Image (tube, rainbow, N blue to C red; front, side):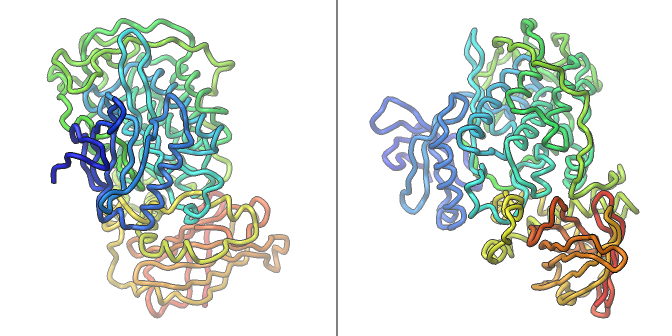
Length: 582
């Protein structure tokens, strides 16, 4: 139905429409100003959890006053539908720019990253807010002849901070898979270092035309974020200077403590020594061949959307002359840095991104970043890489199968939480230990929406041999031992609320007669069946002793109604096997 006026705002045109609702360019009823108005779908507007998220997005934006953050103007409800108005940016998001040009030149990327970094640092230092969904589609760019571009960071709908605990109890990963930091996938506390990792993955994408981990299944991609070192950007774009590789490597370190002290420090390192921008002849670059599959994975786990993300529904195609170049060969007119000369195609574009004029160069950082990320000290998951030919759902043997199971389990848990999320959210106190609270700093938005990629991956991964009984047969107490760095440790698994393919469990550990110094502790787990095995994913601490880390379990299947003992793999570095019985 065509909208002519919304909450007193005259509709100029529709910017975009999606599953969450529509975004319109509107005229303010009293001021000579055009704004972007987000009108939420009527059904979503009645969902209490979504209403809470929507209100929080407005509250977050209202307290962030920064030139690189999209400004909020107003919010309300009309005819049963939520709406808010915000600053309209007359320019594309960088995902659209990638669609049009393949990749972007280093000087432009440096300016974009600097703007986003300033926004992220402001949000963290002034409000202790982490954005948690930094990606090309949430970065808006408006070009100005002769001056640096205006860069705006949008969509703080899944932002979180230490004082936002009511919506942050489930410990689920929230964000967009190709850009998610390892700690987000592990359910660890999230801070500005998480955003820095996502910004570095975004910078890699802008420079090379693809994210650092962009091939294989979602399970493979999650494993890569947790365990693999990103390739240097210069491997895809020969000619990029060494300081770019070094900056990306440090900002994507697995351990947040090994990253830059701030996002701005990363931006300065990426820009490198002061230098003039090279000449920018007009020539597009071959779009990456894997782009359609990558964009399919770029659906956020908990999206709200922003006004300019769909501003160009029909981007102009790239220059056909660049379509059939062999890998590594650049079309004519490319500057020595290896990225596209961001002049755009010769034909007029649907958005004002036709030429990059370059911005001022920042001074070099105080010291060179290290050449690569050090290993993460104690990850929740550390597994060998899956088989190259595996999609994460095949029969691959040994370590490849287990790695895919671990990552696939996280995806399955996101679907599972759609059913049990409210139970977990209101299941009471998470314990007296401060660690039990701070280690569950992610939001429940993942319980309300999962991408098509997540759903299809989970469906494929749950096919089994037909010998399995419902997981409710596990309900009750199982005792035995497991072995990790501290030696043989007593283990009690208590299963409850089991269903057909999902269950919950308490993992309690303590000393054995041969290893009396092990402290006692416990945490909650969520389990799902993946093929014939059952994957138990750590959820939150109940009683955490010292610096102990939670572990995951993979129960060797099948599980039948005659099963009286369970054994399998402890899916954490430094651990081996476990065995329990009724």
